[in-house]
Length: 177
Image (cartoon, rainbow, N blue to C red; front, side, top):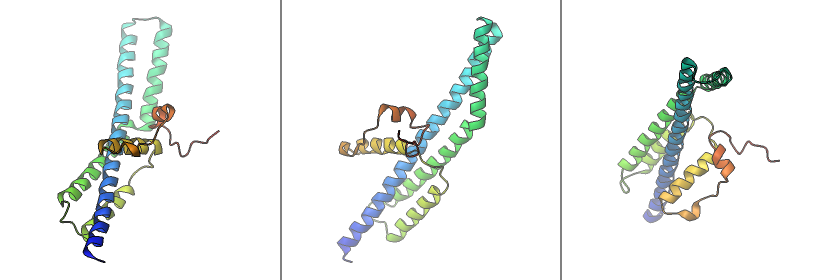
């Protein structure tokens, strides 16, 4: 292989690895923010409901509904493990950012095929520890990166319903009626 063809081949592999790492880090940061929001919302409902019940500011019927809301959200938080899931995604995001640092730290000219092989190996090892990805959330992350890179032609349209539920549903697994 000529030097120019070899360089283009290696540059493309480096670029693809870097793009993949950035996408994964952004995805996991979004999951952390989502689970943190759920966790904080659950705690806020419990505090608000507890104080309303404690001070008996409302009627017994409202207090009963507040108790139901507290029980439901606390049970959901306990069963779903919002805090643990946020921590898992935070660890993954951090690992992907560290790998990005390794790739960028090598520079745009001084990397070798062995470097790329090592980066891709680390990338695959990290992917093996990831929970299944939510497809529309991945597309939203890709769109964000495309806009940041000045490539609006690569943006894929996401419906309002998909955007609303992208942290809850994997649209690749939702049956189409």
